[in-house]
Image 1 (cartoon, rainbow, N blue to C red):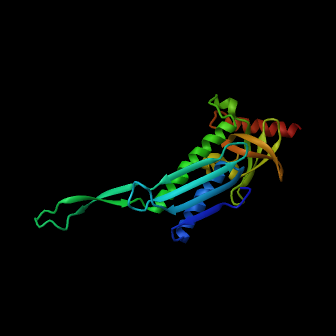
Image 2: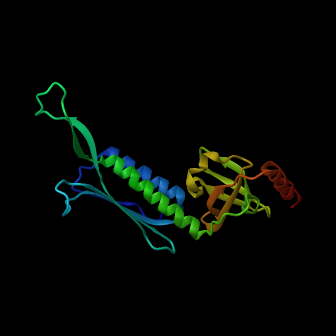
Image 3: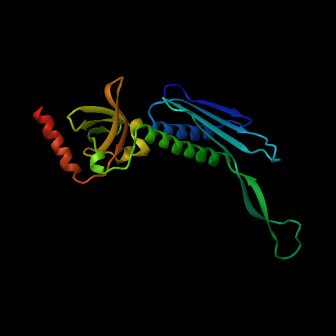
Length: 221
């Protein structure tokens, strides 16, 4: 992310637990898109005209290159659960429906999930993701990967070595990657030279054979 995420609280006591939930949500957004410019998160407890209680409100605004901002807003819902009626004197108490506000942590998680899905749609559309035969989508193989350092190198079909890191891997697929995994990618020129801005595993037949042929072509260079 090009700028530090902006987090604002209104009418809510800030806690370390809430901070961690927001940090995790932002980290997941960065895994989906490596070129986010800025993210603004607003957490507040507000009064609406149609409700007498104080619902929670989460607003997430994501700015990325060459696209309109992604804005996701959610208000907490009423959750109803049965409770005993204390006024009943009969031996079998009557169950009433008592409403309570949706918990703030649950609302934060669900709002970030919605934002992540919207961001995935934008990224896939921006990179022209289409449903084609897997063989046509495979553009490279994972040649080296360093899980502890969270980066690796791809070997393209033309023999080029391309740097990538965990943040460039789409849809939380980092754990699926290993040497020989076929991937499709989008490349750009970064601080480390040629690198992949997005990487996504591709399930194809003959991946091991393709990986071997890549090494053979590199040896011949």
